Length: 554
Image (tube, rainbow, N blue to C red; front, side, top):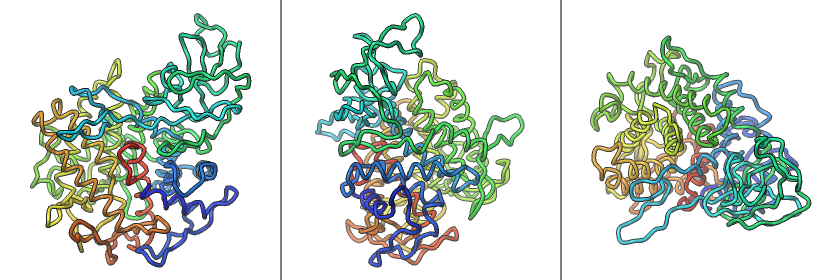
């Protein structure tokens, strides 16, 4: 596992008995020459770095990796959401470590007209590619059982019949049989007893046979399950932990602590930032809000009691984002040359990076791709999860169109080709950055979001595109961007520690890329593994969670 493996191996040397070392190691033979102080207590550092542990490491024993992610979850759980930078990453790392993002990735929408799933890798002309299936993540089985459960097409929520999958989305749950007609995911089961949560009309004794892959069953007289841990996954599957706590609880804490609805008569919700270059509402903070609400919405089953509330929060965050885009129309967006793509081509899809607290006054002009990519992830996960909804919200097509157009605007306005045309790289924003001395921030690169956009545009160009072939025309462009992204990571990452610098300069050398120091921004040292650089670990982990069959370089 190219990028995440050395990070996980590095973390193994930093943990002992649930405690984390005060510093990470420095490799003198790479670009990183310093570590932000107290990394393990600063959640804007520790949170994203810990997410490397969701991906099975080639270098860490499975039992040891589960202990590491449990310790990481406990550290995150010990922190509250009291400020913007750390608080945001408490919430984001929680939904990553506890499996919520994995569940969001496994919620499948309706296929497109060609019968393809939106997460399926592209089918190249002259080839035959079968539909992508996510790696199902096994939940805990009875303590007397050692079999790893692996369903053929994704795992089931606690409200679904799990006979066909044999595995559960939620950590701590096992697929238990009630009778020949029904099985569901529960934390424990006693043979011959009724489940008090069953509808009284259908309450009857359970056999409690454990349903395995393909519907195979294992009868066990001991059915106590463990909590807070999961069965160690096979290679390519996902580690999660229950020690980190509830993603929904953290989302609500984030919303209560950092957001409000500042515009009278509008449902738009703003996420307020503070510290460093932040202050007011920045596209990064609003992007975090959309990411968290959209991902949590996608992770929920249709009968979840909090689903209506999170549906509302998701749209409120979108309205805040849309307002930022609309207010960015007049000047300085640097999207004029390519043409505005959103709102019927009236508005730029990528907002100015900084507004005042009521989303009215512009403080900092130009778009920033980190916040733009996070907002895209939230919009796309939300929209795709609603495609099969029996009663979709009235705003589904509005957000679906805006997400499609934003994918296109992002590619056109926030990426730039190399002089040879062999590579295409994400800039520092719509107005600056790129190759060589123009500067790069490795943490701005989000390969999982680029794959989402590629597949979404290809699947929904008939509905949202300018032509029915628009998505196909963009496919190779997105692939080049993804390939360049991983070459950039390869050029900047330290081999022995897995760390990358906050900033760098990237040069093209034939079919390869070369990185050097001598560039910095946002008041953070260029050669430091700090608050900028650490986010790249999470962005690569997201790529693995969304596209486990395709993201081998993750």
